Length: 109
Length: 113
Image (cartoon, rainbow over all chains, first blue to last red; front, side, top):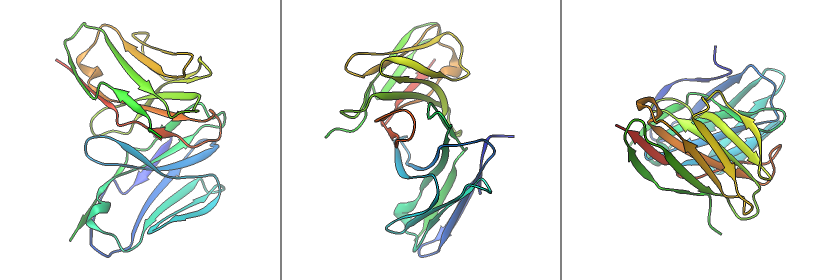
């Protein structure tokens, strides 16, 4: 079993829909990252959080430390949101990130 | 201010050859980490360097090595390349190695033929 599990693996939505991507982890962490990866490979950091909730524009990330679970929500989705979304956890010493397999999101117009 | 820069962006090598990949962190960042991302999978941790010392190493063979220079830039070296080394190699930098956010470069796409 992977230390970081994401669901779903693939997600197709219609423009305007509310989207949720889930991440569960089985190890101790100092922080959790949500990342976005477009074709071509570049990774953009969306959030780093260690408790509670953060919001940037249409993106919201939450984390429940007790349940070892985090969610990424996208409100009013748009085709430009189409990308791979990756959850990654930082170990307690902060020396490494462990990544989930990613969720391929496709938003159709 | 420039972000994390990696060079080259693309590279084709033959089995058995050696490759050196380079990473320049964001100015002021002292921590650099390297990750390998095989097509269709999430990135896998290779190395972390902080203040020019190795602070973490993933489950990769000794063919993989790295170093960090006094200006905090870093090189990843891979010897005796195998077909399975074909991947996107990502570099991430952060201010310190424990609790700060990581910023990623665009990656180097290595193809071994």
